Image 1: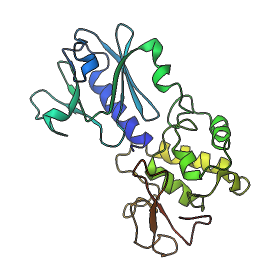
Image 2 (image 1 turned 135 degrees about the horizontal axis):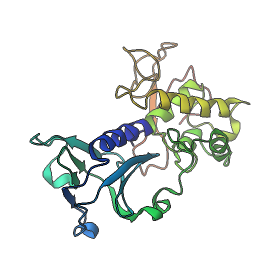
Image 3 (image 1 turned 60 degrees about the vertical axis):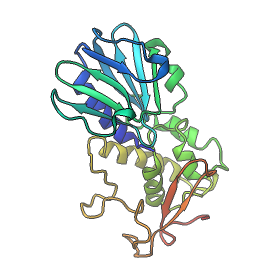
Image 4 (image 1 turned 120 degrees about the vertical axis):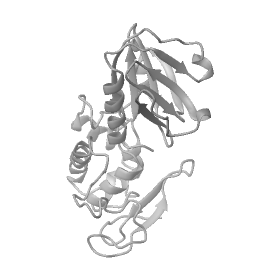
Length: 264
């Protein structure tokens, strides 16, 4: 699951390559839009919304895409060899005279009326990296279901948009509670501090391809991906387990000494 900063960076690359230029090549390789031709239309902007990408195109159209686990957009110069996947994995090609954007393994790709964008992203909570960021609303959303596990609540994009599996584990460590802690059992005052920390760390990494939550160059993450290495704070071995109903691969990392609360 991509993090909000990853999607923000992808949107920035696409915007620089495509915005304010007319498309000279358009190829949407999904059956529903196989005959759609966007050539001759100007790309107006590429906007991230949580983990969604909205490519707005002249004529009131929006190309909506979502990367999920394996999708990616790559930008190439004329004559540059395309890389990022095999030809059969290409789902979209948008090109102009200066650049070609190629979407690989995109699980979601749909062409909408711009006025209908809410059908794709209207369910999302406040965007941690967006102009609509509202910490009070995000907090209210997070606390709406007191019995829900904190890790699951943080991943729910309807509560706040932009947190993926990496930041889920990192934020719970920074808050000193396990991801399985029910939201209603968080210590007084912790939830708003957690919301503020989420905004702070994503904003700090919005333009940083080498994501860091620790501020260190040698160890960029506190717990994610570090089992069974020692905790950076207490040297206790980091542990890992799956969280959720099992329908998705969600490895979750925590320190059994630094974090209190229930565990699997």
